[in-house]
Length: 107
Image 1 (cartoon, rainbow, N blue to C red):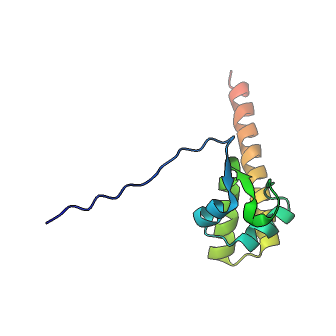
Image 2 (image 1 turned 30 degrees about the horizontal axis):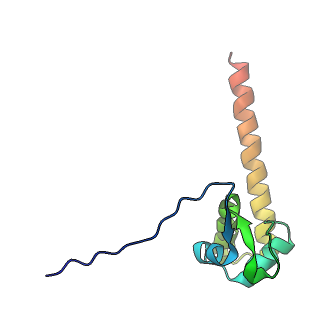
């Protein structure tokens, strides 16, 4: 019996790195058209000419993943996904601020 060894090319990406839009589509299970719509609505800020050539900041991966899941799992449209992501991020930021204030109050 022979062992099959798979070799994967793995590269760690930092938040300051840029990733091809096609790779984002694969990771987030989105089609390029949806990424274009999300960019048009301001959820991500790509760089490059045509959408096929776009690069997106690696830091946008959580935002796109969240939007993708809202659209795919809950049937939310693109505009609704953008609104939901922005509201969820605002809520998280407010929760962080509350936690910091509570820490200061207990000193």
